[in-house]
Every structure is written in C-alpha cells, then in structure tokens.
Length: 272
Image 1 (cartoon, rainbow, N blue to C red):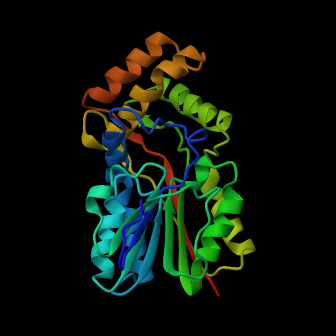
Image 2 (tube, rainbow, N blue to C red; image 1 turned 90 degrees about the vertical axis):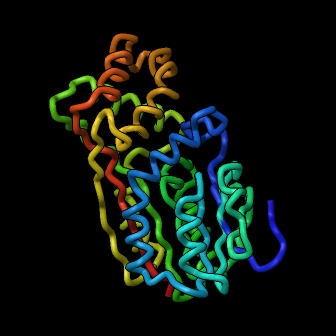
C-alpha cells in the first residue's frame, strides 16, 4: 500500500513460497520482535557508522515489525525519506507517516527505482531467496552513486551451550536442513564479502556479531518461538523426535542455559 505525499519507504521482500517461517502465524509478530531484540543494536550501530542523518533517503527491505524503519524515520527527520517494504506490511502500517511509507513489494519480481537512495538496507532477507545474488544486484542499482548498500545475513553458529545441551546440535542441523530444502542458505553471510567485491562496491567493511541467548529470558524468545512454529514440521520430517522437541521446549523456557544465537554478518559498501 502506498501513501501519497513526501514519504519514506519500508519494504520486505521474500517470496511466500520460499520463506521458512509462516508470516500468518498468530505469534509471528512476537517472534520478529524477539529477532529485533537480538540484532537491532548492531544494525543501528552500522547505520550510525555510515552517517545516516537528516535528509537521507533510505530503503528498508524486509521491514518486519518496523523497529529499524522507525529508527531510520527519526534519524532522517522531516526532510528525509524512508521506504519500508515487506510482502506483509500489517506490522508496520501503523507507523506510516509523512517521512515513512510502507509498501507491499516482492523484491524478486517487482521493480525498484534505480539510483534513488542514500541507503539500502536488508537484514535476514537475502539468505531466504534462491535468487539472492540477482536481488543483491537489484539493491545495488537502487542506490545512488556515493550511497551505501548495507546487507546483513546469518551464518548458523556452532551449537555451543553452557551447561552443555547436546540436543541443541540436532536442532541447529534440523533448522539448516529446512533452510536448504526451501532454497535458503544458512551460511549466506560468509558470501557477502566476495559478492560486494565482485559488484565493485568501495569503502567496504564487514563485521560479525554473535548475541548470547539466555534460556528463560527475552534473549532466547526468538529461538523458542521459532521452535514453537517449526517444531511439529521438524518432527514430521524426522529431523527431531518428539522427546527431543519436548526437551528443547523445556530447556529454552527454564533459567540457566547460555547459548549462541546465529552469527550475523554485516557488510556495507559504497556505490562508486
């Protein structure tokens, strides 16, 4: 849905048939908010390093619940422009304003304006797309010369936990299998440096961060809710058994275990 006037943009662009998680699930907003709680701080630090400020035109691809789109809206001010996109914009439409526009958009099949934005950002989007490299080229073309492309995607972390939780390795392997079966890449973050170099982006920087999740706390809510949604499918496909699923549910809810979240690789580069 497009609003009229001088707007900012927010888009989310994943083919419904490809995306691992069900966007219509009753607790999907809660799950996405938990994801934001784990990774927003690092994304915002990246925006700050790139100098995002008043008057910038920004594209947020895969806006989710709009936490980053709202930060960008405030950072660019009334003379700036933020476009937030997603296949399902129901979680961000309430935040639309004169400098923040929400739009339903499929980044694979729908066009993007070219040479239009000072910043294009996508987090945990490209990893889900079988056409990920072509989509990255589309995002680069949307940036004006001198503007920034900022892409963040995961690398599945080792199943380290304390106290040791052997079943966690089974879960990580199961999630990775589901990703690959849908055409997603659970290690796509590691490919970003090569792709940025091949695209001719300059002044590139690549960083990685690994949040620590503590069971029984909000930091583990994202994985617990991901397990709640996908767990029955994992059991039905023979990737976990029922006892392992129940053990994981118990361990993620009880207090006392620390474990690694997925590694988030953040790559930024300037279009010459």
